[in-house]
Amino acid sequence: MSWSEPMRRALALAERGRYGTSPNPMVGAVVLDASGAVVGEGAHLRCGGPHAEVAALSAAGALAAGGTLVVTLEPCVHHGRTPPCVDLVLASGVARVVIGARDPNPVVDGRGVAILRQAGVEVVEGVEDEACRVLIRRFSHWMRTGLPEVTLKMAMTLDGKLAARGGRSRWITSESSRREGYALREEFDALLVGVGTVLADDPRLLRHLGLAEDPHLRRIVLDSGLRTPETATLFHTMPEDVTVFHLEGATAERRRALGDAGATLVEVGDDGTGRCDLRQVLRWLGSHQVSSLLVEGGGEVHWSFLREGLAQRLHAFVAPLILGGREAVHAVGGVGFASPQEAVRVRFGELRRLEDDLVLVGEIGGV
Ligand SMILES: NC(=O)c1ccc[n+]([C@@H]2O[C@H](COP(=O)([O-])OP(=O)(O)OC[C@H]3O[C@@H](n4cnc5c(N)ncnc54)[C@H](OP(=O)(O)O)[C@@H]3O)[C@@H](O)[C@H]2O)c1
Image 1 (cartoon, rainbow, N blue to C red):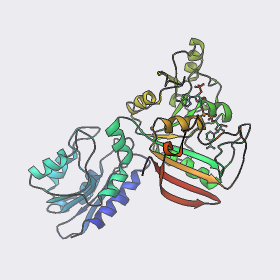
Image 2 (tube, protein in one colour):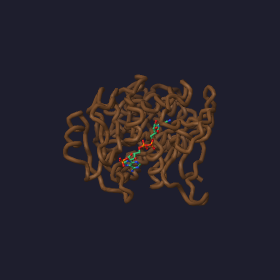
Image 3 (cartoon, protein in one colour):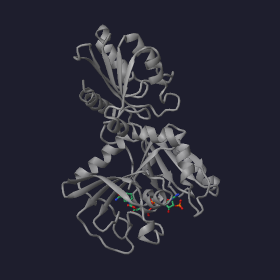
Image 4 (cartoon, rainbow, N blue to C red):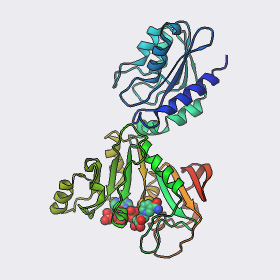
């Protein structure tokens, strides 16, 4: 029997958790009885909630005995927010487990497979493995590096400008592009901007669409000298979600003002150019359950992430507009690289048209 079809169904089920499972991975599962009929389906829907295989096996009940569990991710073996899934899989009496990807969490990675095999359960691995690995991409990166996976989101003109001369950027892209940009906020653990964007746009940076289980979104500002005004609109709603990274030199008065506004202040070291060290910022975020980070500009911040090799993905909206202007804000600022050989390369995975805009989604550094 080909296990691809039920695995593809499990992958589709996993999508139901897109807005709720983080920092846990999305997982889907299907249970087939001994004759190959589907008798249970499940997905991991929210962090702390039942895992996909638990949901699918409980839907199948006694019909699972002697059947097959098809699951996108290796069953866990440890007590996390919920008990180990392998125990439940064994108790269900399934004869076979088909797994898409191994769990990159070092406390699991292969141990789930080993326990099942030792107990006499047949384990089939690597079914639709590429799609199953893509599904848990952010989680894998976070587990492997301890840092969130970073996506740069840019809304720009055809000539690569984020804003017009003078700083006005509302609106460069179409309503549909802005909506897609807002949808990204619903699935990332945190959103980051530079203080330049706060000063120019005074944004709210909230979740607007109500797709995510959790209305809270960690909002991060890079602000070496704490220039963010305590009256900024950022602090009008859920100020407890705002974290401002700064350097040692920030005055006690500014620290007090932003602390009183509700922000968490985190001091980091200098990156060698007088700005916040991004590795330290990402390490802090990674250790605070942030597995995915959406960077929404501006140009200086994009440059720092690219220069340091700390961004993995790009999601660009390109409007059919030409703004021109030496002084206009570029999608990527900084001093720039000295030759095309040094340039950061993006491997496009997706090229789409949205109203009159182009949407380009790709992997940074991919060859
Ligand atoms: N179209 C869009 O999608 C979009 C999105 C965002 C912004 N924008 C536009 O972009 C403009 C702002 O962009 P911008 O390039 O001027 O400013 P920015 O990138 O938002 O902020 C840059 C500032 O952040 C601080 N910072 C701290 N650590 C940093 C680090 N490691 N790397 C980089 N910056 C760091 C620095 O100020 P300190 O040295 O004081 O810390 C730096 O000047 C605005 O006009 C806004 O409208 C457009």
